[in-house]
Image 1 (cartoon, rainbow, N blue to C red):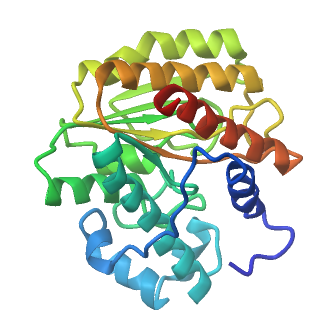
Image 2 (cartoon, one colour):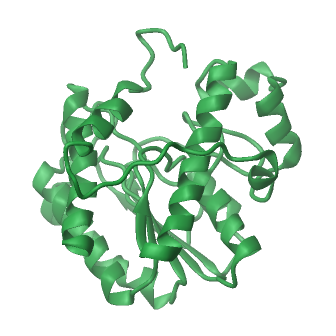
Length: 286
């Protein structure tokens, strides 16, 4: 995207995740198609979609997103949303799929925020509603930052349950109201985090979703520079296993998106993301 070297967005992690998983024969990779303007406009204000695509966002809107506008940004953004759409189509056939990007949960209906331009999960839900008979969805968001954009988009939609476990003292500092919010104090450890997840996770499936989206951000990791929580790699693995086991029990299609991760070194973040997909492959396809 032509970002300056000092930019906080860890663009290199996406290549590292793919390189790691390409060594594993259980995975099949497909280039991301580009989401279309109409696909995006099912979930977002059409005027906002056009402003992003044509580069007519205001300076304030660009600052809120956190990326300078460029044709490369548009290309990457359309590919990121398109990857989640493609994964969603694949999951309808093989039950489980994932995108090696996405989880852009800070994007609201009519504006972007926090490195998120379009809300790929909202776009995918709108696509499913337009093209299938599926109506009920659960979004399980375990990124350390609240899924505020997702919460706002579905605030008045009782058929979409939004569950967010996040740091109470972390971005966004003005939280939205998810269906279920669990705000965790700084330095929450594995045992405390997993106990909180165990308490609320069944509610995502009591909703009886036709389809489940998992925003699997790994920024709760202790080494994350933006996280403020104290989870270990083993804790993240148990977290993912809890989600995947619940999905298998419910037997709904699942799409995984990667969400955030900002560890130093970034290789640790890439390994944590790869761990999520490797565990998924072991539980669903081995």
